[in-house]
Length: 76
Figure 1 (spheres, helix red, strand yellow):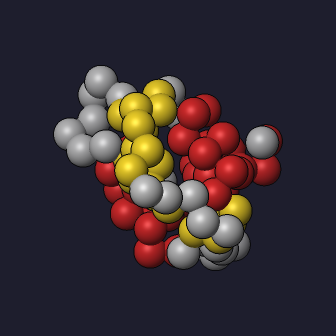
Figure 2 (cartoon, helix red, strand yellow):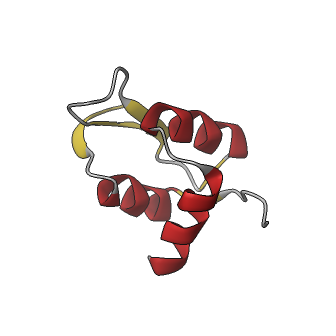
Figure 3 (cartoon, rainbow, N blue to C red):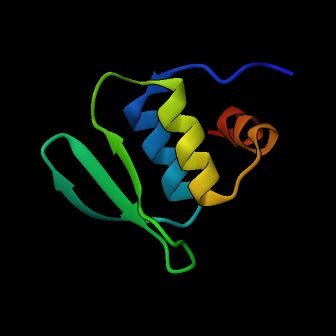
């Protein structure tokens, strides 16, 4: 199975919007997204590439498996 790679923040934003999250606000360079069934918001920096650990933490918040994430990325 392929590994999770750092990706550009705009591509990760497309993924987050695909999962049903909505943009709430931006504080500095951090973009904050929320969905009604989440306990915590999804937060990531609007920087060039998002590091792997931020992607993994947000996948945990969203309740999405790595394989599911990689399959959705191929579609986007």
